[in-house]
Amino acid sequence: MKYARRGRSSPGTVIYLAALCALFAVQNSAAQPARGADAYPAKPIRLIAPSSPGSGVDIVARMVAQKLTENLGQQVIVDNRSGAGANLGAEIAAKAPPNGYTLFIGTPAHAINSSLYSRLNYDLVRDFAPVSLVSTGQYVVVVPPSLPVKTIRDLIGFARAKPGELRYGSGGPGNATHLAVELFNGMAGISMLHVPYKGSGPALADLIGGQVHLMFANLTAGLPHVKSGRLRALAVTGQRRSPIVPDLPTVSESGLPGYVVTSYYGIFVPAGTPRSIVERLNTEIAKAMQAPDMREHLASEGADPVTSTPEQFAAFIRAEIDKWSKVVKAAKVTHD
Image (cartoon, rainbow, N blue to C red; front, top):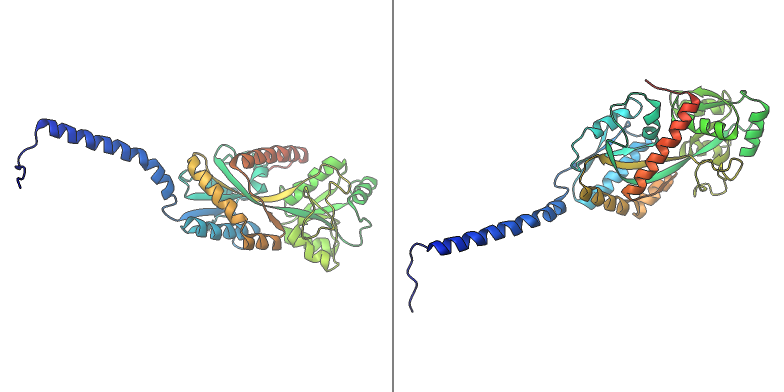
């Protein structure tokens, strides 16, 4: 058997091999984006919760983080950044690199703050890319049993007969529990006196004690007092009745048509985050929120798992900002 003699390659062979290498390099580089997209996430992810540990937003953030950790195969770590009316966490998230490794959980406070504060270091629409809603909740209208009203229609009639005499408590000026009542006042054409507290807990305590006459309380916070008989529930504020109190009507169906106020949590990423990452997160969040244990846990907190496309969530946020800006302006409330 004869073997080819080893020696230097001819110029034509060198050119041919170089062309093959170049072609392979082009094909290989074209495949890189797909493999890069599949590689996300390649390191732990931070989920900023703009509240202290143990709060409602923190509880939901940790539930979401646990499910995303399981689904994505990387640790999702909750980073609590409370302060400045929930603006501190939002500001930190807005300035983070748009690479998918910083998530932010937003609440109604951020839509409200867009008009409540004349100077903010972030813009909810400009600086964030919405990913998905994760849950919605409701408030419950509660009064002491001594107040002679049993329905929303009764309450409106009583307030009209005694303008300015009814006092309502809230978790503080500009808080959702404050502006929910101001929206109610405007739509019903009534006037009730605002008594702000440093948190909803003290407001509920004074409502039970009779120092104020009314509160739009978080559903899970207010219901135990309703069940004990210390408060009377008139209605819930959502678009539909709550599954945990199905016999309780909505405000809209019981005296003030069109009134809807919901609490909600949603996931954002910094603006400029690649669309492929936004879509991946949206898909994984949808899976997480449909898990039976997630649905059960949220139900125990008086919340419903609700997901959306990024576009639906963006439209929802714009509508919320518009709604609350009108309420803030009418109530003449500002924080600077």
